Length: 502
Ligand code: BGC
Image (cartoon, rainbow, N blue to C red):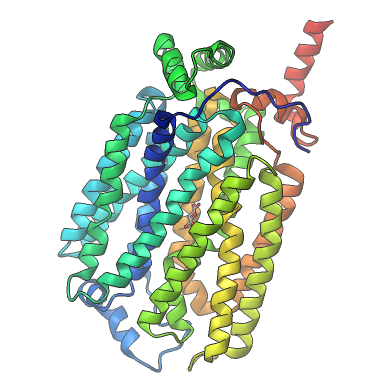
């Protein structure tokens, strides 16, 4: 079902400058990951709860409270999830900014919003300041998550595009891990430890800000905005060679077609826009329906539910954080060799087995009161690790990679905005609903996520094309128009072509 034609390789060298661009831009992932990792820990800290959510704190203190329900509080969940609502809306503005101002300036704006968010959150004395901080963080994430994966995909040589794009996800996982460590340290600093946790979000954002001043704009974005000469020199810089004519010609042709499209959002809903739009949106929604953020946001809370003490549960989430980082390297290594589809499918099997086993252990051994015995609790931690492993080398990175490489340049920023916002919407829904779902569904929640993983596996088998090694501006010709299901959406195009040839 992949592209059977030979891979076209344009000349390129990996210079220090090129690597610096990849890494500096990937700091956007650090910013996103830091926030994912910090929220859960902060919302488990007593000082924080007493100040902003006294009711939840009181409930937490009741030792006899139902295991599955002690953290169920809509306001507390809003603390975590409001960011994603803001990011959802911001990603559409970010799409416009990416097209009109370029990827680089959009990255700069992202880091600025995030720094402001860190200031408000760290200084918060009342709930509205805290929420405002979350909204500013959210705008930062919306702008960063739109611009950074696109930037990485556009500057990467086709044969390494998967690996370069996954640097974003690698930094997401490092961000989550660092945040877990920081929470582990600040949870013992009373009463303002949580302020340090939230305020330190400014550090990855400041790194991204500096990065955005050093990196080059992408050739596609420059040519798209009419700066052909600058586009060519940018391409020479990021390829590390002078002979870039063949690749440059391809970018110019793609951008010329793009310029004729005045309304990219309308083109996206035309027949030929449907295949990439469907795949991009579904991949992102499914990424969230794996249930990953139930673990990422609420790992400390979840482990406390299993009967770990506060410290031990933070430590367990540090372990899962480390597994998350380590397994992402597998993906960096494998994605351009074995391809996107095989990684996605293998992980579906691994994640279903892990989740079903967790669900079954909790169902049979964790009652509403009391806790799991030590051995079983350790088994659950191991199963969480195999689950996270599977996610980290598949749906995690592919969620950002595939949507960034399957649109033609004229609909790329608009299409990708739909992908980002679908991710944010479903992250919001899971963040907002998970604690209540756990309270109502109890251990069945793990079966619920497994069922979704089965659905997404079937989706991959029939509808996700392989994009390994295909130059980004040839994806429509070489991937969509050849796909057994999706090629029907290009019938008109294909007919016109065969007429021209006869
Ligand atoms: C997802 C996040 C998730 C993270 C975990 C990212 O790709 O978008 O929602 O928390 O991976 O590593």
